[in-house]
Image (cartoon, rainbow, N blue to C red; front, top):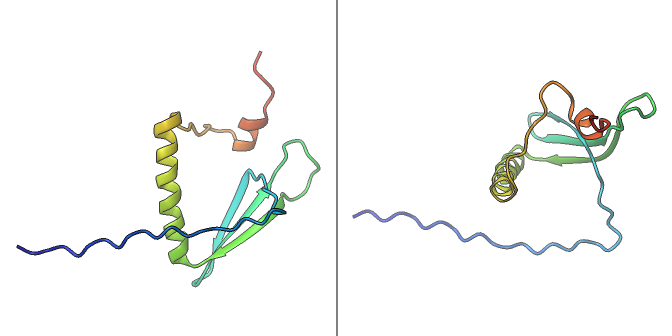
Length: 106
């Protein structure tokens, strides 16, 4: 009988969140890449706001391996979220910003 190598235990990494760290709300992401890194720009686009480009609030750079691990972790957490709270419905033809900020239907 052949034994399988055991899975390494996942180590919990402690995070320190500075008291002065402010959360940032974004509703738009642009993802670009080079051969060695993935670049994620997170921005806020306010419908009906001043014309011009969306304001980038933060930029995250990571290796392709880290991006793949992040992608897997995000998918796993979205699945757990939907199991608990129900399916997240993606709007059809409208943008997410239009879906979130349109006036109530009468």
